[in-house]
Each structure stands twice: as structure tokens, then as C-alpha cells.
Length: 287
Image 1 (cartoon, one colour):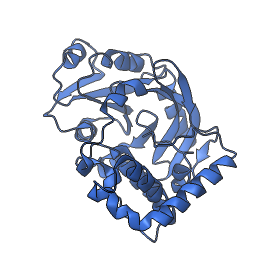
Image 2: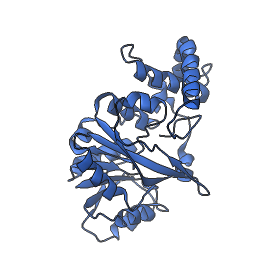
Image 3: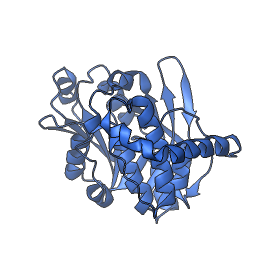
């Protein structure tokens, strides 16, 4: 069974659409664990009015999205975990296509898929037509050919329990765990589009007021891992753009790597131009 983990915090205007997208799955072998992370709006009330044994409502003290995801996994009954944000929606084929992939790629630890981004007016496709085991997940992540967007991948439950979200982070926490995934897990990708990421809702929280809880401000290089270092140089570029090194001690330390950061950015841009893979180009990371 696939357990869908939904952290809920003040999403009363979106949560019913998200749950309805779960109900609309063509494959009904799922459970949905909704973790109320201390919401102060009507979201929890809306969830509790749904009477279906597959919907499990849990309440906890506010601790952030990472804490809610980790708590949800600990209570899940399924062998596979699918993280889903409370303002995103699954396509009706999502669970069915993941079950097919589980059968087709039995050695997988994590299975990723494509998705669409909606800004309220336009829908943009993100992903790749390639399908199968990913031979070098780090390089694919670097070139934006592998997107591990919550809602668009599943991971074995025992590994989700082992690779927990860092509860000390509130920005780019998805990137931090993705780097651990691609370094150690056997990943396969399917070409199906399985979810819709609603960008307009999450943009409200895109602020840079707390660098201590931003993963971009705590990047550490491992000289023995080339692709991991390239990804982090790419992230340092974003950190320097988001946080002035004059004012911010965290981004200031990256200036010693400025030549490598510039060269990495040039390598990323040039390689992208000649890539045969269909990807979404972005000046920032969409995680």
C-alpha cells in the first residue's frame, strides 16, 4: 500500500481540493495521513468532516513541515510513502502509475515522476521523457533532469524512516534531503505526469528573513564527491543572490569559492544548451 502524507498548516482554501484529488485515484489501494501541524484556521475542521476510513487525521504541536512529514511517516501503514503538500493535487493516474513502476522496477528505493506547475493562469510541464533506472542521480539533479518534488515521487517506508527531513530547516529542506537521496538510493524515473504543484500558494512563504533555517546558508563541500560539490556550488550562487555577502555572514563564507561558483554556473548553462533531454530551465531551484 502507498501512504500519502499531507502536512496541514493553515490551508483551509486548498485542503479539500487536495483530498478530493486523492479520492479520484483510479487505484484505490492507498491511505492518506493528514498531520495537523497546529493549524489555526478551519482546515482541521474540514478534514474531520470527511468520513472515510482511509483518511487518518493526526494532530500535533506546531513544529514545521519537516516535523509533520516525519511524524506522518511514523504513523503510516503502507510500504511506500508519498509526500504531498496541502495545496497541491494528484492526477487521477498517480497511484496507479506508481504501482506499475513498483512492479516494473522492483529494485528501486525511490521512484520519481513528472509533474506540472500551476501559477493560477498557466500550467507548465516539468520532467523528462526518459524512463528507467537513473545511472547517475547526482548529475541528473545538477542539470535539472531529475526533480524530486513532493507529490511526484514515492520512497520505501523503511528508507523514509531512515532518511528523515531535517526539522531544523524551514527553507530548501527538500534540497537537503534530495542530496542524501541521490547519494545513496537506487532511483528510477517514470515519464508519467502524476501531480500539479500550485506555485501561487507557496509563493506567499518565499522570504529570506531567517538564514539560520535556510539550507543554502549551511552548505558543506565534500571534495571526494564531484557532482555533490557541483550541486552545492550551484546552490551557493543562489545563496549569494538571495543574501548579500556584505550583510550576511553565511553567504560571505562562500566568496572564497567564487571562481568555482562562476565556473560551475557557466558549465551548467553551456551543458543545458546542448542537452537532448527535455527539461525546465530555471534561474532558481524549484524544490
